[in-house]
Every structure is written in C-alpha cells, then in structure tokens.
Length: 413
Image (cartoon, rainbow, N blue to C red; front, side, top):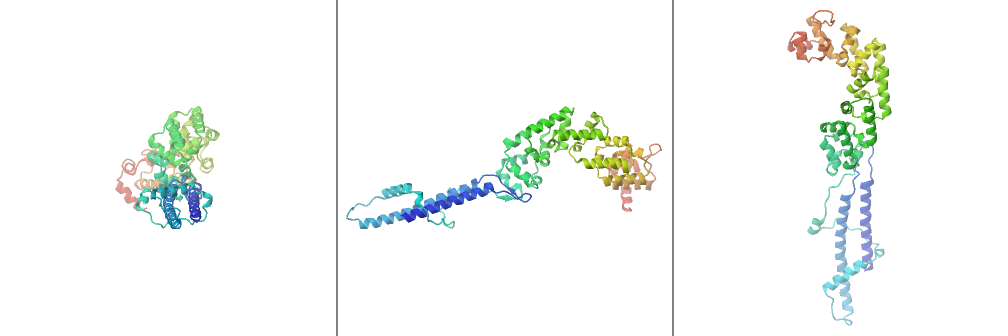
C-alpha cells in the first residue's frame, strides 16, 4: 500500500510539472524581431488538455488502487477467519477505498513513473475530453491568430490589410496584445470625429498602425494645434487622410515644418496653409530632398526665386520630385523643344510628366509640322493640354490626326 501511494504521488506531481511548463512556454515565449510573430494569449487549450489527462489518470489509478485493496482484503480474510466469519459488502469496500484516498498524505507519494500517453482511452473518457485548437507559439502570418482574436477580426472588418502589417513583426505583436474595447475603439472614435469616413479607416490604419501606441491626449493636442493655425475641420480631415502619419508628429515638429516653407518660399500664412493642405506629406516627409530641389531649380536650372515660388504653389509635388527627373525634363523641354524659362514657369505641369511621354508627343507634332509652343505665335500648342490630354484627345484636338497614325509613328522610333 505504501508503495502504491508513493507511485501515485510521483505521477501526480509529474503531470502538474508538465502542465506548468507548457503554460509557461505559451505565455512567456517571445518571437525574434523580423522573423516570426508570437501570440500573447493564455494557455487555456494546453491546460484544458492536461486537466482531462489528469482526470483520466486519476480514474485509472483508482481502478488499480481498488484492485490492490481488494487483493489485500482477500488475503487478510483467509488469515483471520478465526476472528470473523462475516465478509464486508462491496459498498463497504468502496467506502473504505474512498476514505483511504481522501486521507492519503501527498508526502508519501514520491516514486511513480508518469502515465504512458499510449494507454488506450475508453469511449466515455474520450467524449469528456475538451479539444481546443492550439495556438501556434510562433508564426509568419497573422492569419493563424484571426480565429482567436476579436481585435484582429474587428480590424479586418474595418478594411485593415493585415498582410502588410505582418511584414513588421513589432507592429503585428502589438496588435495581438491590444484589446479592441480598451485600446482601439477610442482611437477609432477620435478619427471619426476628425471627419474620416468608415471606408477610409482601413487604408489609414494599414499605413499608420502605430497610432494605437499613441496617447489619445497627445493626438488631441496636435489637432488643437492645427486648429490654432486656422486649419478648418475639413482641411484637417483631408490632411490626415492623405498623410496618415501626420498625427504621429509632435506639435514642435509640425510648427517647424510650417515655418520652413513659409521662410524658404517667402509665403504668407494663407499661402503656406494652402500649400500643405494640397500636399500634406510636405509636413511628414524628409526636408533634405526638398532643400536640394530648391537649390536645383535656382542654381542648376536657372529659375529666379519668384519663379520657383510661383511653380511650387501651382504644383507642390515639384518639391518632392526626383532630382534626376527634374534635370532630365528641363533638359529636354528647354534644350530640345526650345521652350524658354518664362513659358515653362507658366506650365510647371511639365515637371510632373514623364519625359518619355513628352518626347513621344513632341516628335509626333514635329513630324506633322505642328510643334509650336510659343503663345505669341499662331497655331501654338498649349503645354497644359499637351501633357494632360489622353492620347485619343491629344491626337484629335492637337495633332489633328488619328490614334492609329500616332501608334504607327511610335513604332518607327
């Protein structure tokens, strides 16, 4: 009896230790940055399995204990027939076994190997086992966690593209640990108050998922700063939609950006405000390329300060354009098409058009004898229409030819 009690204790402690190790691995295991995603959920599935396993083991050892007790009682009966001729009933034996089990001290149980996982399970026991799908300890995709996370399910319903977010493991792990009601809902309500529509929330959060780590009061402070600069609610909504990272910039940084454009371009407050409303990523992008472009326009391309100011106000993208593209466009327009500076200033859309497209259309007009771009001369071609019209309208209204003629000409280039 003592040996059986010791074996039962060892098995029971072994099962408890295994359950503890599994639960610890699930809750405390962390992923390597940039490689895998880790779940932050509880170990309910593993623990529930171990609980059923433990219950099954107890039933098995109760059976063993019962058989051992019955064998012991049978032996004692033969040796003590002189003392008693009455055999205890089956119910009395079971009560005796249960009493011994309940009174058995755990300190005496220490030498039993763990129950074999290959032991067969009865149909009744199998039905009682609660089977939960196990969460992967690590994964390369958030898809493995969607069925277990209400937060991810809500974000998908909003239109968030999780396939883009999961490329950033730190961001993916952040979402797995956020509670929708506590951490995300308040941010969504804040964005809707700014003026973002339901169909705009998904694209916004896909790009700026880091907004969930921002303090709500800081976000409100930044909006209040923009309002103090006379940006209307419509302007702020448009800026936030087109530049999702805008609200992640501090008040000091936003103020410095506004001051930079006002000073460098010598703009008044109203024109500065209009400039950033039309292209709000001027406030979130790097200033170095913009500074470089201003030098290119002035020193390399030969535009005067007031001419640069006029072009930037009309086409704000000129500040963020690729330097090589700027120089290639100017070289072709000015040196090949022979368009002077003062005409280019009136049509800065040229810098926002592919050089290849400009070249194709110019060569076709030159082939037809219509390459005249000086407004002071008759039958001149408007450079605005030259770059903005689609091929069909360009051929009909400017080249006075068919699209087939244009396509045949392009094959000769």
